[in-house]
Length: 297
Length: 297
Image (cartoon, rainbow over all chains, first blue to last red; front, side):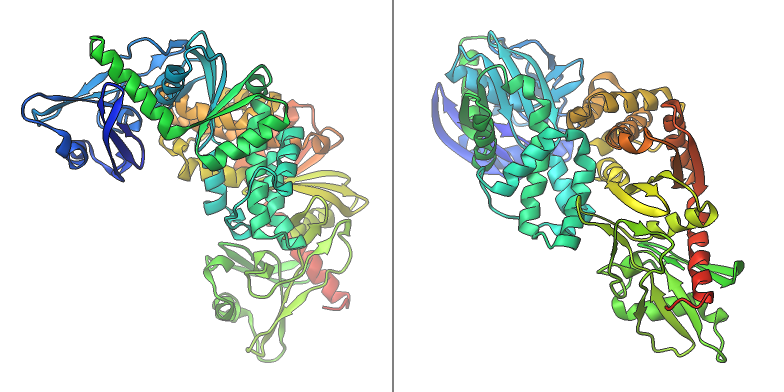
């Protein structure tokens, strides 16, 4: 299962086959330590049997310091094919055992991931020889360098979180409204280019969104595209070394993957796109396969 | 009076003399349009007389679109000695009239100020020949170029608001706690330098505050200095054209003025420091003097 901040998604696996799946909105952030087991049982109970205990493998924020039990990080360079050091959470129910995958950390510059490593392992499970960059856009966008099957180094950008903070909690909230757009929106592209051209101006450019609304009646829908463009442009210029040197594989939802792939292709990048849930599932299938090969859990 | 977002400060003036002053926490953001007059009366009523109506001059966010009545902006270049186009708010009480000073705006890049123009006029009232930059650090830091008594151009940075958003509403909140520090704090200065060196890395550097807490036990107090340093460094590198070319006068509170003046002096700047409340008062005295000279209100 993938047990994140606000959701849980579980799969019933037999070898490579998904026999069933289930979801819950009981993410780790809504649970106290003594509530995890019952939240889990409400999802997987139909799959359990009294004959043989079921092994449950989990990735994601459930293993964070504020989660069920902390699963320590493994450090870069991290060979994705190595057997991860699962942490066993104590459970009362004899019908299953619960094992949390470690996140991956980098000492300098300090950085962490938890959950994304399973998506990356899913990609390498389906494309074992992949060399290049992986981008996982979102709340905390990750850029990852893959060399010889290892996570060599990576960095996290707060792009999605900054978008949320600025559009919901800042002065800009009065000048913005959600708008659907795509990677060919002129205002979005122009905003990306401006941010890439002089990224140090980001803070005054953000305020200019407010001023442009007051002085020039820039519409809230257009301003939403400006904000997205400035923040994504800031990210892209600072990770140029990742995308300028070879192929990029995006693992994300459709909207973000379309935005990022359109921009990266316009810079001359070779871009592949993979779906988050599919890559997570492949990562979990890979972990399950290792268990079947008799590696210790 | 200076009537801002969260406070009101009123002075009773006779020529250059302050006969009395009063405060209230009824800032404009807590008031509906029909509540302004009674909020005002609760502060100035002791000063009113039935013999002769009192003229009340106000600056600040009370003149914003969401305030009592919108006072349109005057555009740059804005001669600070010109008589501003006050907007009269309708009042029921015959003992006073209420006049709001306009803010100053810049068409391109779009930018606005409301309240700061009065502080700037206060500085030019006390130092009429001032040429150089003025910096008003804070929630929305302003950098202003003064030439021949005019606000020539300016820009706003969301430094203080970003600090508040990140320290109170973001993932970083768990890795930060308020700490007292000064411009000679080693971590603060190092963080400023890092941000000035490669400002495009701001978003990954912010996340590294969280990661440094998880991996290296960086203390929340130190992390507060890192966050301040990164955001102030980002601002300072992007306004280099303002401070590299001549003197800078800071108009701000003691903490921010000390931080900024220490840094700017270390870059070889000539720095003057002025107090916000004093400059606002001088700006209001200046406006009052013009009224006494018979200029129309």
